Image (cartoon, rainbow, N blue to C red; front, side, top):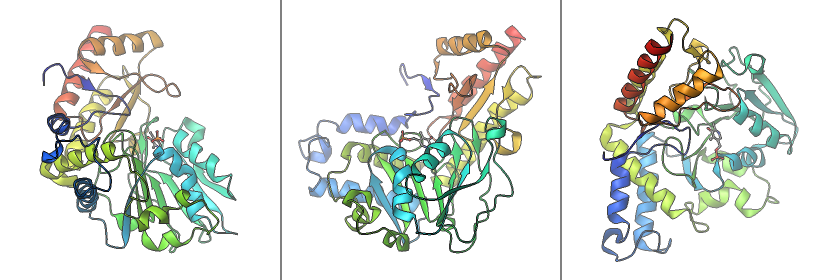
Length: 361
Ligand SMILES: *Cc1c(COP(=O)(O)O)cnc(C)c1O
């Protein structure tokens, strides 16, 4: 490992070390071409192969049905906040959203530019510390939008809300893609910036059921139509080749690791280690998320007072535990333990938190 730290940043986030090493090895000479992958044409055979392999790996790992497309896009998940209403709105039908935090609110703000938005449920009343229950989408909705995992607040949908037949469910899975086994059939659209759970910043994955590609009006600009890239295998224009390449290396690593069911198993173990520390701390650590809404990916908690929190972040840093400061809207601390955070890293953090409590309780 050399001088690698344990990186708990919320994103961009830690990547599997073997994928980084492979990228390092191949950087100057990609597969015997005598060129870096950064230098080869996106129309070359070599790039084409890697592009298709990356897509095939996403399909395989997530068991994506044949009637869904996988797109590699740019502009981050934030661009999808407006792409979703542009591509899925239907005149006279409300676009329905569940408001579970800042990312949901940002998605709502964009949708409002395009038509009638209904917030069907919100947990704003308690600093977004839980996932609302008994969510009711209307049968007339153009689509139903959720944020699968709330990166900032550390809450996550433990099960999907009921959605009326014919209303496509759309989920922003930027921070929980491939973290647990997902039945893609439950969704019309899944989108995720790659930089939390999958790869580097610069590429966004969109998984979409094919029939939904035809909703978009002809008057929409070419690149704002999902259909454009869907018809061109995400090669309508130059794709973010290096980001897709790193995703491919990470995906190869995950395949060998044992796929998403194995990832989920380890993710559950990792999260349990940290939530146990919180629950057994006699109130020294206070979890932000309600127990039934806890995220497997972002563990948010506070300590008594900003001074103690600052010290905890600082002491952690001196032990090679990086990125533990909470988001400014929640305060306190946040340990992001995405797929690529090893169980060893989580154990190192839990040992540190135990010691810190013993010293300061
Ligand atoms: C990080 C994040 C985003 C924003 O992603 P960008 O790629 O930076 O636009 C959106 N939604 C969620 C849930 C996130 O965690």
